[in-house]
Amino acid sequence: KQEVTQIPAALSVPEGENLVLNCSFTDSAIYNLQWFRQDPGKGLTSLLLIQSSQREQTSGRLNASLDKSSGRSTLYIAASQPGDSATYLCAVLNSGYSTLTFGKGTMLLVSP
Amino acid sequence: DAGVIQSPRHEVTEMGQEVTLRCKPISGHNSLFWYRQTMMRGLELLIYFNNNVPIDDSGMPEDRFSAKMPNASFSTLKIQPSEPRDSAVYFCASSPRTGFFYEQYFGPGTRLTVT
Image (cartoon, rainbow over all chains, first blue to last red; front, side, top):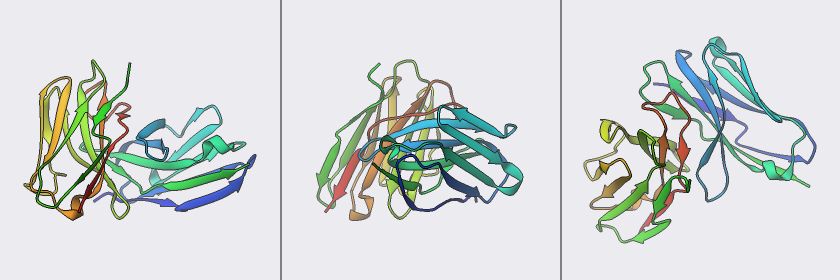
């Protein structure tokens, strides 16, 4: 059974810092990996989707990398802003295409 | 587009009562997913539909849970009878294509509290 772990569970940084969020998964036979953002009291918003054949994806200040063989992904946020404060979740689609398995998320607080 | 719409946003009910959660997916989307989020277990898939047909309900915790999608624009998740351990946030999501390959668009969720 696929398990997804996100470390750290919570992170607090001052505005302007570059930061890295980590995601690890136990079964490397995945089809793709997604990073989501969740704001308090709201649903999830998809940020980046990386196919298993890709190494990274970029969107603005966000860069997500994938190392399938080691079962790891990172989300890099450059020049963090208070508006980046949210919970970030990663999810993997296993190769059987049957379901997304989510991590429990990293709660990020960026202080002005 | 208004996005995925869920109702109610908050529901407080007593143990043993029937609870019905509603979802309107984005128009034109072919897949619909129901998730449950708790602090202990995180986000879990309960069931998903492709073109209104239930594909996988293995995530539905018990027979007390049932889901329907009578047409492309409406789905319900029903819990009967409800129990305190059902307290969670329930999300509905839709996707423009069938299956999990494409981006899912999440609704704001229904926070359910069973006392």
